[in-house]
Image 1 (cartoon, rainbow, N blue to C red):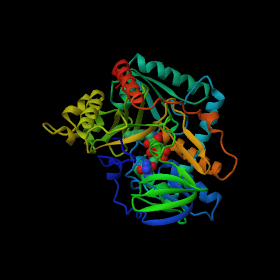
Image 2: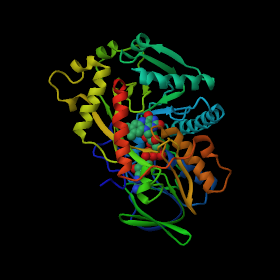
Image 3: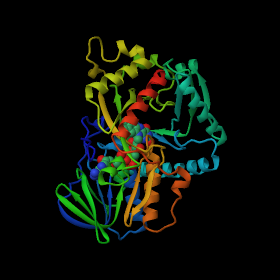
Image 4: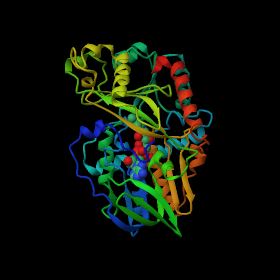
Length: 439
Ligand SMILES: Cc1cc2nc3c(=O)[nH]c(=O)nc-3n(C[C@H](O)[C@H](O)[C@H](O)COP(=O)(O)OP(=O)(O)OC[C@H]3O[C@@H](n4cnc5c(N)ncnc54)[C@H](O)[C@@H]3O)c2cc1C
């Protein structure tokens, strides 16, 4: 049976690298609020914050199934893109793309100001991002992205295999593009920093999964394990898990993907890698792998996918180890020392659920009177989620709102299971085979 809220098998590696933090209490008993936001991620926290700015007297309550930093927003690869995602990049619709880029940059600024005000060390640096292709399958989409960058007048550098090898220390890729419009960060630290900047008047309950939502007259009631919240307006910012509350079932799916980070590698080994010391690389193929070399000398790999359920830890570790070794074969003899078990070669391995829609357009807006949703940012919702969460508060409070569907599109219908699962598994198998050299 698929989970109705995230309950991961493995702890977030990013959060494990941070000092422990005291979580807010969970909800016990019945309470009343003006608005309840389900999900303390990039979307939910942006929405709660904007709500309180626009309506300072409102009682805003945020609940999360997990803890800030440990849950999904602290499990990503830490890319904060200032421009449209590859999935959104459509060189044939440049006006729309330019507007998406402008809005994304504004949302990034709000993350930056939160981080700065928090005073926390989140390792946030504007080091740009590489996109690279290892085969003809990846080269076609790299070319599409290049057209988008050119059409939008955005700077980039094109790199061949030798240049990529010199900068990153891997000859796995044939060709790549470097774009400066991306920040890299420690994502668990970023979400902690954003949370630390919420007004004290906003109440946050952690370890409080919403189990059920119901409308009751003009009110909404959220049932949790040990309590109940009644509110006039309810915001679903819990990504793909919104469908477990019966909302947008035909539009949203949860696809799990996985990441692992090495221990700090020894300086001699790091010197043998490329000249750039803090970098991130995104795949050009939909099922490809993300890579990072962190400022503190670790390598991160994100790869693999599964539909609506997590793979076992041992399977994920073996898959990620293979993906990293394909790119850095020299690690085989260096990573964990001779004879070390595979699990020892990574310091942390974890998974996370991505809220996916068929055409990458978000599920956004008012679904029923008083019930709002922003979800389905696919693989890139840190900045986009911030933008859409902010805009959702504006919509709910009757301020002029963004035309989200005109800019980001409307999510397509997907058939129910078992057809959906069969479709996912068939297309994942086909695409993995076609793009096998990119994996
Ligand atoms: C391994 C991995 C790598 C990724 N890398 C990147 C990246 O580098 N850059 C990028 O932009 N994006 C990346 N993503 C995607 C990114 O994490 C999401 O798009 C982003 O977190 C979406 O933000 P959100 O706030 O909308 O949803 P989420 O981050 O999913 O937050 C939803 C919150 O809702 C809570 N929740 C869920 N159900 C319930 C419930 N029933 N009751 C209460 N709370 C609930 C969850 O605990 C969670 O805290 C990655 C994802 C994964 C898994």
